[in-house]
Structures are given as structure tokens and as C-alpha cells.
Image 1 (spheres, rainbow, N blue to C red):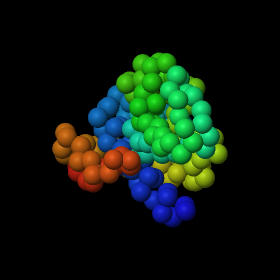
Image 2 (image 1 turned 45 degrees about the horizontal axis):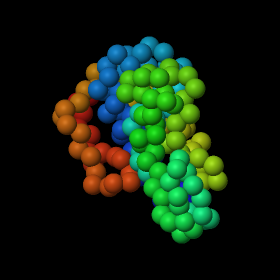
Image 3 (image 1 turned 90 degrees about the vertical axis):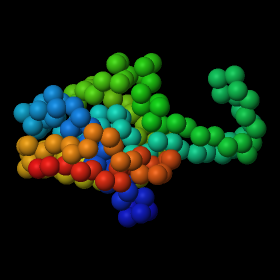
Image 4 (image 1 turned 180 degrees about the vertical axis):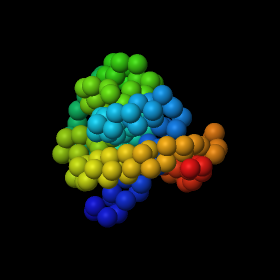
Length: 164
């Protein structure tokens, strides 16, 4: 599960994160100047450009959610990427803030389906992103339009052309 479930999503965390940082040079400089921000930076990158965009579930029992009646067996889709931009949950949700406090994003899901590999993914993201930012201080995007992969549920780049 860690190998297959964690590979593409962690790769997307790193690729999406680098792309977002290169699109926000002020935050990229902030991270270079304050490497101790890497933990909160990765949390913000997970919120801002979530590698997993939705989760599907099946209603176990009849229920009502926000006035919507669901029957046992109904399919539900939770849009995690949209929830991570909810203005009721996040102040100024479209702004990237690597020092954002109280960042209760849903990039790893929630409850009993919370990602078992979340700590490993976070650590890999922290190490890879910080090393790339430090190792390649002149890194810049070579294409302004992201080359997103064709997957509806997993958001990740097919390619990320950069100059170092």
C-alpha cells in the first residue's frame, strides 16, 4: 500500500509543490531565507495544490447531510481539493502562505480513511522540496502553463520543465 499508494501522490506533492513555489517567488524566497518553515510550507503546499482531489465512499446507512437524503448504498464523492480552498475554513484560501497556522487541510483524507502513509509523505516532501530550493537557487519555470496529467482524481504534473 505504501509503495503503490504513496508513490504517485508523493511525487505529485513534490512536483506540484515546486511548481507552486516557482509561481510564487516571494514565498520561495521566504522559504530559502527561513528553512525552518519547511514543515508548515509542505502543509500549505498540500492544501494549496492537493495531490488527491477527491475521495469516494458508499453510504453505509440511510442518512441526511445538509438537507440531502442519502440511502444505504448511494455513492458519495468528496471534493478534497475544493474543501482545501473553503473560505469558511481558511482565511484568504487562494493565497499561498507558507507560514499558515491552523492548517487543517484534507489532503490526506480524514477519519478512519486517513492516509496511513501521511508521515512518510510529509517527510519525503520536506526533504525533497527544501533540498531542491536550496540546491538550485536560480531554478525557474520554463513553461508558464502547467502540463497536468490526465487523471481526474490525482492531481499531478506530467512534466515540469525548469532551468537550474
